[in-house]
Length: 68
Image (cartoon, rainbow, N blue to C red; front, side, top):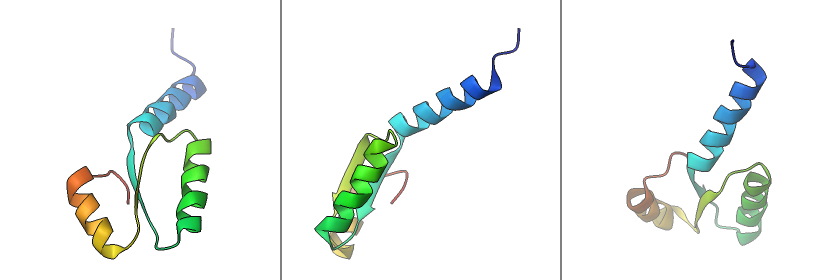
């Protein structure tokens, strides 16, 4: 029996959300919070923040995020 395609897609999306390491970069704390809240509401859990370009470069090499 072939699994329900919608169920399979949903499970893949859940897995990606739980696995994706995301680095949020913005110099405005408010914008970082908005982005973090949006990602959290959509199921992403491994979120990190950088406050400026220098911080972003340092954290990028430290964290090796999937998205930044």
